Image (cartoon, rainbow, N blue to C red; front, side, top):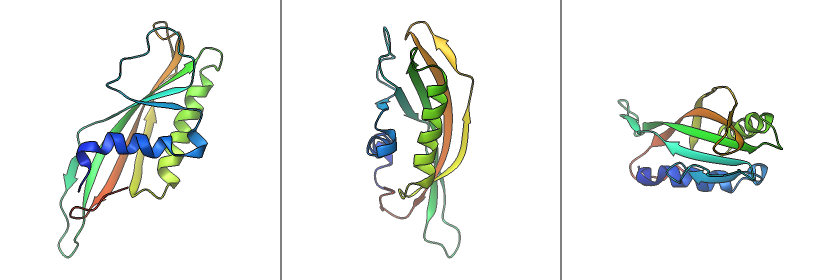
Length: 139
């Protein structure tokens, strides 16, 4: 499957292009964590290792499986509920989008306050699969 090395960037671009998510600033997780007050709803994304399930007999397609970790920061003025709402909308965008991805799992911890970012923070995990057909792009 072409583009697996760039899957994190492709997912970032996919989410940035969704009208329902225009109020969220998306960053790759390797960006430095927010220093100082967070002024806008922000989501940092990181893809875990990509696993492959080979194609079954008589089927030309295998599957790529990955876990996307999402850290959502909400300014203090928006409250912790903004983190939960953003996580839900990100899940919806991946579930209902026609992007070749199949959402398998959604999970998150509690919303906590980050003194370093002066913002509320929610960490979530999103399990995804994509068909891996030769060199076909998933997006």
